[in-house]
Length: 131
Image (tube, rainbow, N blue to C red; front, side, top):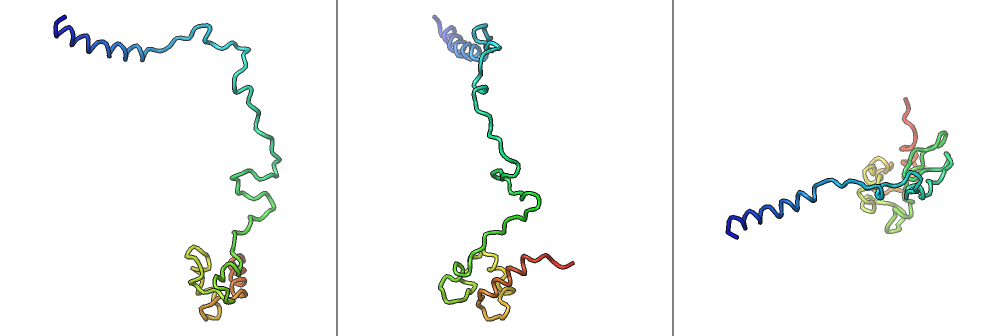
């Protein structure tokens, strides 16, 4: 076998293997499922039926006539990290609503929020705006 034949053979063999891998399979009668055969999908249990009033996971829309739950707010005791009876801005995380609203919530301007000031501020924020 000369060099040219070997080169031609080396190029044809991988090409033929690639071609045979790309040809579509044809189903035989044995491969086709009989119409009355049970598939895996038929044996799966149906999803549970839920009551329309039950909350669906991920559904954050309140049911008709219900208010949305209030956001989770920390209690005064949780905010008062050093337990001195007042909350200063450095005791609040920058993500706390009171951190950004501190000057407004601090009604007397003394640099410390009392429990009453926090309660009043939360009430003011929850009240609908006057029109």
